Length: 58
Image (cartoon, rainbow, N blue to C red; front, side):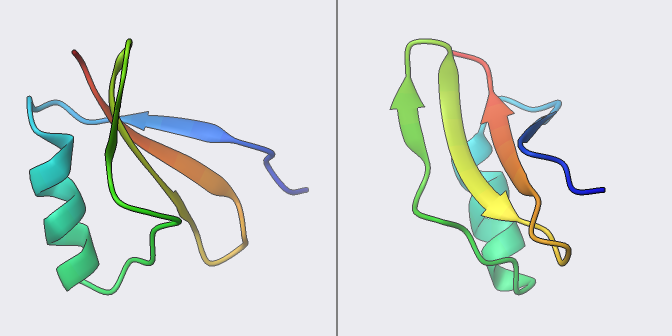
């Protein structure tokens, strides 16, 4: 079974810094972090193709 979309909320104030750390580890994101009304979000896919949101609060 494949998940359609899942959110991963990080316990820190800076999703952009976590994005940079994960990119350095080889995680491929759909694009750079973007600021939304609900916080900063960056979307990536896991090895099974599931989409994940890396999210930190506003």
